[in-house]
Length: 387
Image (cartoon, rainbow, N blue to C red):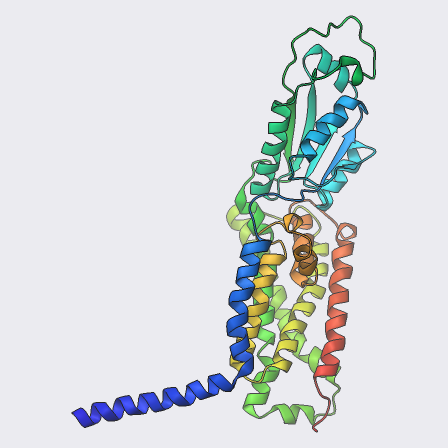
């Protein structure tokens, strides 16, 4: 019995030693093992936060008085907002919200200074409600400024654009009234925020996982050289491997759109044609990333590990889980290199904001550019012939 146990443990240790030597010599695997914790530390330590920062907002200041400018400056100095971008009309401000370029839209009425002297000042606030947590916090920050704003602070004549001699300066001031409305998600349901980007997350996972094992699988099965011996160019090989997965991706897209609509009533409010059109370059770009990983990897284990290395940053930096507008500079620009960043922008515009083809033109062009760049890189990585 002792001899059998001794032989058993000896064999286990021998195999374990052999595998340890293989792992130690696999520099790519070891590098990824240490790279992932560093990446997670940087993402969750620097990139992600639930506290709004650098909030983009637009202002339609019809009052154009020192008082209105003081209120807008009080909002800015809270430290949560960028410098306000002035717009020339109410419709222009709404367009900024619908494109996702601004989270808040403040409208200061023309009689703001006069109403302040009369003791009933008010401003209108429109907030993009597609991200409920951010919307609620942004609204709360501006509301706090409004509740603590004293319209009669300082000299009365310093802000009065219109003369109102019949109104006494000694009249007690009232808190600034905030008339607010949440656009695109009036009830601030978290479900709508996540379901709008569900298709993007599913397709990213599918495309990267499926295509990353293609070339490396051929290499491990011994059919890679046979494939290269065919009278085909590298571009034809790459596209041939992408087409079947693209067809499956459209089935997954339909499932990700129809199922939330049937179960939760969350249907796209925009153009279905635009949705299916912008999906094609996204799927091709995501598949190209997977093929690129497969061309670089030497084993399927390496391919899977590197794929996870791409999937996690895509989910985090793209804006599907956390709004990308609030990420710090550098991190926000880095996320723009990922296909999922542009696709989730198009998804939210179509599903939540009722966008058409023209409104998703920029994400569509960005995805096409990413795909073409990746295609050019693949043409260099995949060798057309043996040797």
